[in-house]
Length: 86
Image (cartoon, rainbow, N blue to C red; front, side, top):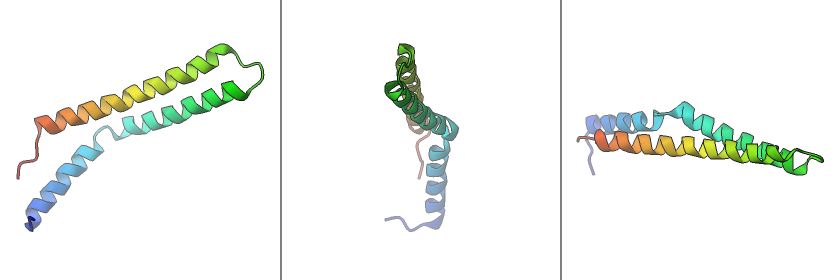
């Protein structure tokens, strides 16, 4: 266990930096997934809904998940290229 306060502060700052990367993109991905589910439910339970609404909901969800995957890959790349030096 490391009890050095400077080390702990630097480690916390590093973790905060990594966590704050692409915060808006993660939020957009979450909102996009919710919007896609709402579109799917609306298309499924509305009488006479056009067929393309179902596919539009699936496309919105897929794009949102691609955004999540991009954020995960980019954060992983950042951590590998900027490891925490103790």
